[in-house]
Image 1 (tube, rainbow, N blue to C red):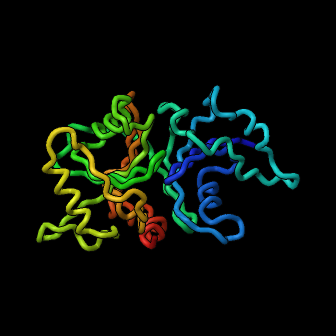
Image 2 (image 1 turned 135 degrees about the horizontal axis):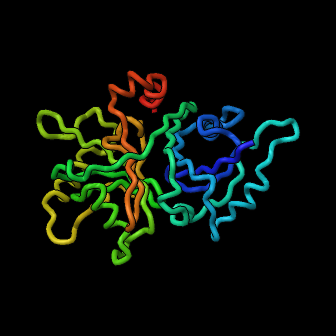
Image 3 (image 1 turned 45 degrees about the vertical axis):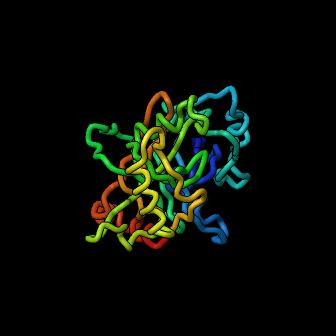
Length: 255
């Protein structure tokens, strides 16, 4: 029975060995076996050939064996602390997005076209290893380099974040359909970033934001990177999600 490696990275981080395929693992982690827990789950599929001198992967795999009745082992935790920084970018495979009722959408990495960037403020939700919502004048690739630069006193070794919507209405205000807390505060932060001078490249909006209806706030997609590179996981348009992944999208829009 195949043992998979999954890196959970939705506002927390953990490396887990499991004998469940990704869709079943996502459903299990989202709703549990007794249907008593519910919540979005975001996780990467990690190259099963990945080896580490820091993370006890082989020991966890050795304990990840079927139950006496032959059913697969659902999860055996490898590590729950400082995981992402010890897994190189080359080992990250598909990104899986599970809804609170256990439906899973899988995204593939694709080249990111930085040449298509447009000027203006961006809003990112950092998901791992830190979790604030920030606005930034930097596009995703430059933001990644900035936030993982060792010369930056607030740097992290590697960052995983989502690029989120900043749609405006006809009056120039943030669109009221966006499920964010305190839209006026966000508008102030966006304006401050747009007119900032010098080294003020980012501004914190919320240190620990509630991610209400999170999946319907995604704009260009998800990014993971460090000083060595960047992986982009493009997010389908709402029309494509509704057409090709209707059940997942319907679940995602509810919370």
